[in-house]
Image 1 (tube, rainbow, N blue to C red):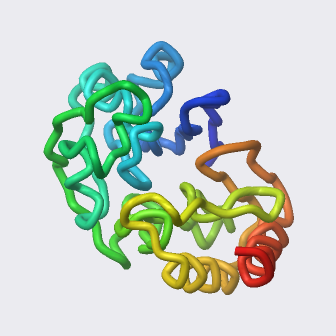
Image 2 (spheres, one colour; image 1 turned 90 degrees about the horizontal axis):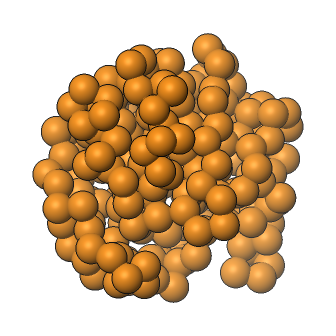
Length: 200
């Protein structure tokens, strides 16, 4: 299955379309519109505003798509402090998710991995057969990782999450920010693990 990358630019997070699933919803709705007819599920990797800014409009545009988020981050959809919305001069979407996720859940071919540290309810999504990982803000290409100095962040939890991801067979890595890696995704994860150990 092909992954379509919708860049969030310098301010907002990447979104990805994977079959009938949209991952994150910070991008402008017009960027998602070409894929809207195929999307029936929206998965939010964590509830920071740059990943959820246009969630209500996009969900409606996609025929009232099912909105999914880890239960520990669901409050961020209505709580401005948890979502960091004030940093963007905005408000949280004010939505209650249709589905709250937990570690080990499945959405289509994607396995939900609870990867806290950047936020308490951060998740990554792994397709084992395709050897691809949507990592949210847990780990980025180039060996970097998500900040843990925001409210709810936890360095130890982030280190454990990256350690967990480093045990996966990952060719393609699709992070919440920056360019995806189409090959050797595991190398980027290993580099992030080492960078956090040495400098984090």
